[in-house]
Image (cartoon, rainbow, N blue to C red; front, side, top):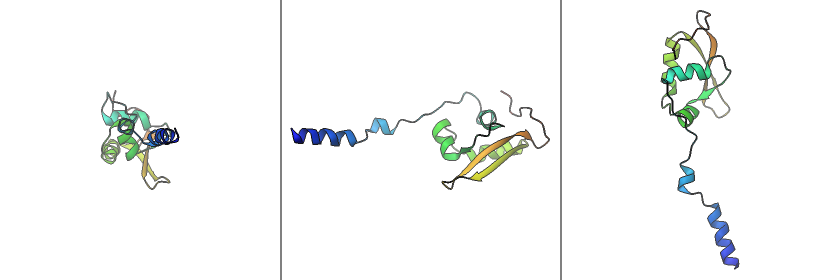
Length: 104
């Protein structure tokens, strides 16, 4: 009986492959730049490349932020406690407008 309980306890500690592959992933129905503008602009949210890849499937966040900068939006960066670059977008663009750049 003792061996059976020990075996059950050990099996309960082993992560299953199915559980390891689960992630919260949101499929984007807009372009990545449209999504990032609406998700980050003026909200105070920050996003790292690891978060963007895991949650939204954005493989190259740095390139998307460059696209957003080239559209005259103000992208702020900071290094978070994990040493990763976190991106945010201010509400106003370089001209002071709050109008959407990437239309929905």
